[in-house]
Length: 404
Image 1 (cartoon, one colour):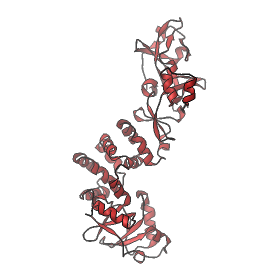
Image 2: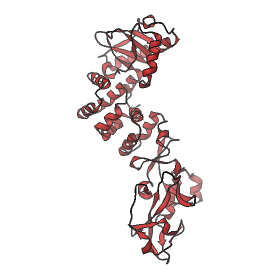
Image 3: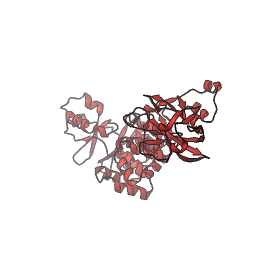
Image 4: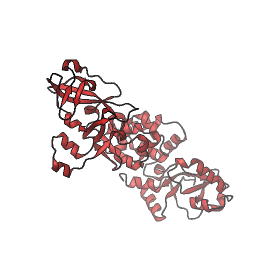
């Protein structure tokens, strides 16, 4: 076993024991059918300038004490060329960032460990410890070993992604994390890295993560994605979240994205909400809620919930309206579950004492209303008492505490 730091800058000697130059880089080859990437060769430099490549086949000894060739230097030296599966460790891996999923944080590749694997010299692990950083600075000894613990990530646990970003697991494992945790990690990345990572996720997951990112960073990311890619991603969001993003952007940017959105009922709902001031009930509401007519049975409503529930974050009430969408009252999910399946909504609907909000009602008034009645959500009505949307407590809190 040896490290990149222990061979970087080490003198290279040929078969005649002549000093040819120093190690300026190490190339590895990544093959999908091999567990560990093999060392392809080293880059030779003289006077800080890279002068050529030496294949691993032309190297007799490669280690922290000496590097010796099995032929004359002029015979071994080749032009520096790379293919898609050949990676420069100095340029592409060392000092790059990886995501430590256990600690939900970003860490840096401080050194690289090599060793024999299946009779080949391979890249075995990456060192993300402070000990690795100190080793590169030439600082070592018992005191360092006592104070700084080693921390290695096996290469087989590393997944290469866009912009040379290294993840400590595959993308399938990444999406198992809560979107808020993924957002916290992304907020610590550069904009280029965060943009690349968002695009590497499936659009539904990317949309959920984007929802959780702080508004100022979210605004920059959407602009970095560009109108077309941003529209494809945010089209997967709920209506209220989509409206929030549109409201974050300058006028021209928001118009571009709206024009790129699918021209469906969701986009029409977004345009309708954008007509209201963002700090009113109309501007805060979502048009995604479950409604039912007074003659619908419990079983019919339950079947409807089963069919459409994946698109909703939560369901607390069923909103009962007549055929003209005039608001009649609510049926709680609890009431629905415990009621006879043949009962109709008009038998269960709660009509009296149901708090509602008007479309032009202000944020402070809404917060007071929901606090007073301990509401998870409230129906938004127009001047004709028709149901036009629903506000959840999350919508109000996000406006009151935008950076939470």
